[in-house]
Image (cartoon, rainbow, N blue to C red; front, side):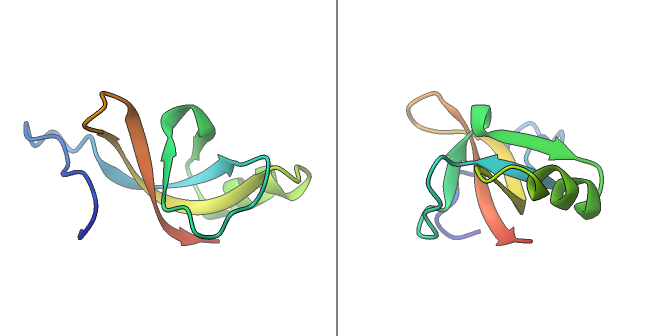
Length: 82
């Protein structure tokens, strides 16, 4: 994908799409990448939606990752808000 850190070159499928919640104290729609510490991955979209429902600082999304940035941080990219 354009503008994203490439997946792991070993080809072991480390960078994958996943349903998740993204922790953001303030919702900023312009952000498209998040540190791994802000992401909680779930098996289904409904689980992510349920987890975000009662928490004003968590938002359900489809994310791609993890990838390792040039700064050495593990990051996830936003693909779509749920």
